[in-house]
Image 1 (cartoon, one colour):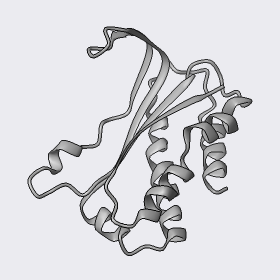
Image 2 (spheres, helix red, strand yellow):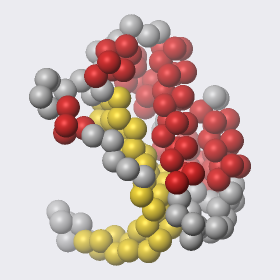
Image 3 (cartoon, one colour):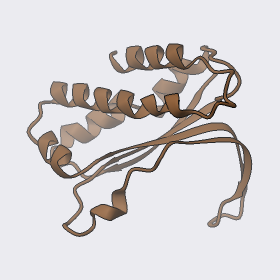
Image 4 (cartoon, helix red, strand yellow):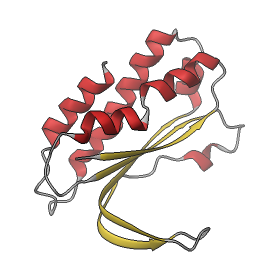
Length: 153
């Protein structure tokens, strides 16, 4: 079973794009789709930080793409709540759409936007190929195929 978490940050001019993003990559739909699927024990959680924003000039550096990261087992203290959080077999990756890509989104139809977003999410999840060598018990190819099939729905 794979659990998903999405962090979203949107600043898109066409309102239907925002609803398309939220409807297209809803966490509950992803979790339901992948709930019964098994890919191995080494990756149990996947978090994708999805940022679509048009920052003012000079502030682009605040929205840089984070490199993919795998955490085998680590306890982290939430600095806001002081709650301890256990990250175990967790893969993090990010997708940032800013600048020229953001400007191109404004002219896309809803259908073209879905295709664009699907392609970008699949590209960002290809970072799963960069998992460390110690992650042996995870069927990356089957996961990627299932993710592409889910996003095409």
